[in-house]
Length: 273
Image (cartoon, rainbow, N blue to C red):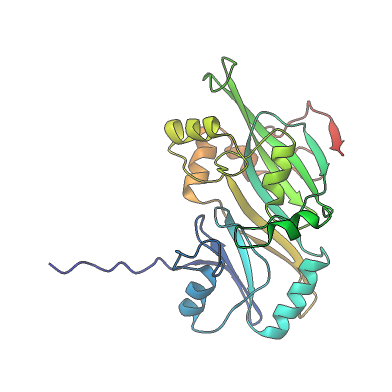
């Protein structure tokens, strides 16, 4: 019997007009070709181009293991305009993440980051560069304490956080929460293996628990406010349900104010310098 050739599933389009198109990027899919993952053959940019039958132009990036909203321009001029919006921090980006431990209710992580280089880059040149400003705001939406001893304590605590990076450094959210001593679950580079294994063994979760859920910007052509959202992937959503956090996802915290009973009200705001 001839082997069946499986066609790739169509990318989910969450917004489209004459100038822009946004998709839900699945976890594990690269935005475009990369020298780091030379073995990869599927990329969001090429898949979307083939799906809609016209060129698309990337204007920002999501890490390979991160899922969520990914925006493209449909012509070079709009790509230039969108790129300028991202560079000038005129695009508000919101993520959801699951972290180890319980962070404060809300905070600002203001910790410069040195540019990271891959193994094909000049490492000496990278070390000579000064750290770049990096700022991340966050709100803790929900927490859970599980009766499992992952570390030295009889229970383990985890939190769902809403994150708004104010700058766009490489791996900024992942590195900042490592700095905060609340690493992201499923992060094989900056996280903790024992907690990653716990989520894999008990929840079947084998991914980075970081999702880009919203972009807010003014449309680059007509200037109108534009909000683009993307739902959580099924495996992320199932974990949220298993931990009893559905209400926190449905009713986000805004400006540190609880919009649902699952948003914390017993932790003070703070800044980390």
